[in-house]
Length: 148
Image (tube, helix red, strand yellow):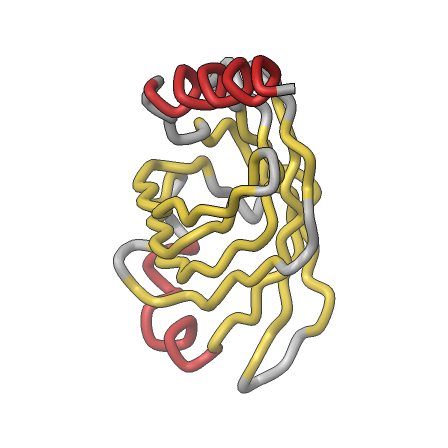
């Protein structure tokens, strides 16, 4: 019995020594406006990501703020669990409550761009073998955008 605990401790130690890489954002799919309003609009979409690690984890939560062209768009919160396999693509279903005040002020410029700058900052909760840890979200990139 003691040998099993020593073996598990060594395996856990070896896995913890490898540097965990942040998942790679690939694309957005299935963009929908689920509720349109003057003060608040609800958007839904799927974020397709890739896990470059040789380690599968469980995504337990996401809490981040989304910015488009450096203007606050809204908050994205996910409170369901998603199993992420090692070295594979995975999909995060997103529901974002958009603060329309900022869209009205700054949205006109975005409508005529073919590409927009997107930034997401926050934290996600991950779990592996019963151990929970937080991982920062710091994504910045360009996304193709077209209404027409």
